[in-house]
Length: 440
Image (cartoon, rainbow, N blue to C red; front, side, top):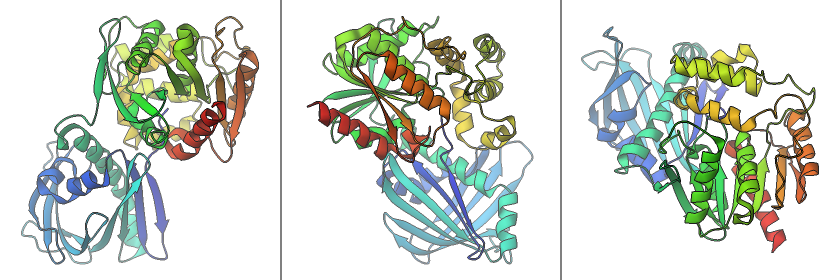
């Protein structure tokens, strides 16, 4: 599953609000997207608001004048005027941003000192916006008015815009055709033995971008969008076997042999694929397959897939994601509204129909019963990994699977949890690389 990508830090003593996000684009493209008016107009501001750039002179003393107008027909519009203080291409922008009237007169006491940092990071660029307010009251008022949500929306829109438009097309995505005619999009990077990354529920290739980059020094990495997600197409009716054929097509593209990495429900799909494809898979790396094999938590309802289908068929995509989160992931209901405020919720809504696919992959393995003894009979060397800080169900599941498979071992990653693919890709990549080196 996706985890919250945006981090918020408050320093009331300094009257500062910091909003931080890693976006899956290079620092150069992030800088261009932030400093060239024809680009800024396409993504700046929250969703459902249109940005108009009237002036953008990116140099110390230069002025940036823009407006944000709501698309809801109410006519609500905000005018802003910023003056650049420092421009350090491609690493830092500093400007004083202020609200203004329609004649560009600055609204009294609305100045905010804003610093934008562009830092190369695993998976792209860490964007860090530090806004200093005149008072703590102004800071709290900005939060209440939705400033955090606006920035997180803008980050997401920037990433989408650069990926789909600024580069003249989708970034480095190649395609293959699976056995049933479905188009599967993937990114290929690095050198070395091939490894295919299989994403979890409600995720696409972007979630594993950081992991792919970390692995690329040792492997040739195939990071793909599972069918029905991102840039891959879809074909009905769905069957788990079709997803295995997708993986087989990627392995064929890689030369006929590859390792597989899968996280969460994607780990179970990778396990199924390795069992079916035999010696086409050289090694299996699984991170926290979400089996429920005892009373460590409530089992997933036997009507789970039917209920998901009903939500999707009636266009209730948000309700489908919410049901997945509460029923399958086990998120307490009181947290859901906070999660909906994050841009990743909209992304998950776009993939809501594929939640049924992951439900079918999991089958009865989340029913509270022991793992089936006849489902996986292959002899592919397997490393099952869990995060030290993850819930007990993941540790119980990993140990049970390692005991069930003939060539498996279990390893715990210190200080990690279920979000490691996105939040600690370097740690996860090093565990995989160390294991691969051990085999040589």
